[in-house]
Image (cartoon, rainbow, N blue to C red; front, side, top):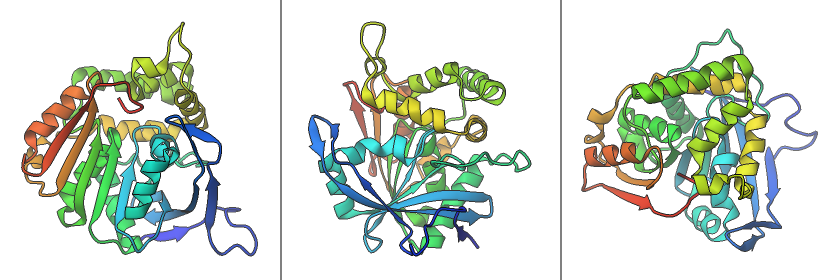
Length: 303
């Protein structure tokens, strides 16, 4: 059975709320000033496959929305745009209690996972989600995932069909890595293993996350969100990122199981995204009665 633990020093004396208040006053997103107070509870839950961090935002009596970020990201770096936009934040929290699941060791302040621990597979990561749902007493949930996180949540929906009401997937993966992607990931994996979160790795990850327009160039400075992402990557434990990358690079093709999904599926992808073809392939193999594709034709924070 999963157990919740707290890291040493996480709770102050006399504090039984286990909550952190995040005041986003003065943050500008989309041209508007945001002044929203969010109360976040962070749980470190022990599962059969190790510890996983879950940040809970909202009223637990409301329907659950489970999120899973992309490689080397957590809920702060991957989904901050949703919460820095007042309209989106208000809409989400009005309708859902949000359970942000971070890949093992990707949460803020996470220590390096012991090298003695086995590298988890994508199936192990999907099974962790089921244990998280059981820990919180959740039934069927909505899911929101980005790229690698979208793959994990799709796999979870295939393995535990009764636990998923719908999937919202951004630049999703469903096939096994092509030789090109496998080699690209292997290069990044070796760089992470031997050199850590070096400049080359950060540049490769930024190309994965953002369009060319958002990343900037010699004549156009990087956007604020790219600079924030770089700072976030510098805080990540490179060995933990390496573990998640190894799992994703060893993923099997799950195309054949897509048509058996009965939950609603909504896929977003940028028309210039390196994952555009993958998203089209996935959409073509989902039951069209329950799925839809949205192609974004403008520069976006999600490619």
